[in-house]
Length: 297
Image (tube, rainbow, N blue to C red):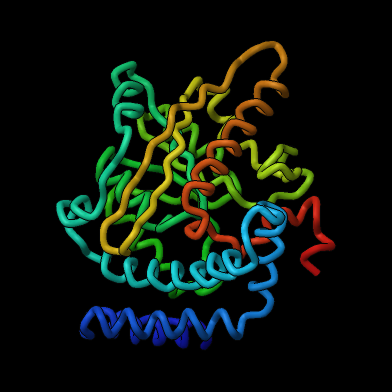
């Protein structure tokens, strides 16, 4: 029953986006974002803990509040873009983006290698794989299915428009290795907290955090370069995708150190991207929970 409630709400949102003037939709979304910020005490606290850990007193409390408010706005505007991208043509999709430092990708392809795209819950992260798939061909990633089957079907249909395929976490590595072997690219989001068992300890914003080694493990095994890529916007209409210098995972006799160096490099470039425009990262996730769990209580 709840499945259908979610679907009806989504259909209403689709109707609102498609048949209401954009400036009215923007005002409605701004109101919803404001109300969410006022009502959602739990996630507002999570964001404050994260910002305090990351920036301490380097930015003001007012700036921390502004960034948190923007988190809610980003989510709602990303949902609007999600709706607008349903059944969009490849031409119109690519008109929305500008890719910077594209030579990092083309240089690797000239060597006959595939690429592991690495990103975070940053900017419009649902738009990113669509654009990568439309621009560079088939892309494989990993994603947890939504609890609502109806909404998960909507999500998967949207993702699959431009040769983007999502694998369930269980057994995903085998699928990603197969994709690279078949000459197809891989994309991973690697900015979330992990358990002691799943992640390794690195420095992130000067604090210890657990980070998934999945990209590094695959890169080392297959000798595949990792290209960090992050998407940002200033108006929620046009978007910039910036590619960063490839991370090459070494393959020496000390495998653990090879992986640690690669993962730390991934954390460093993610931090660098966030610092450029901190109000586009998803601060509502308990990023440092593994090491600072008591702060989130």
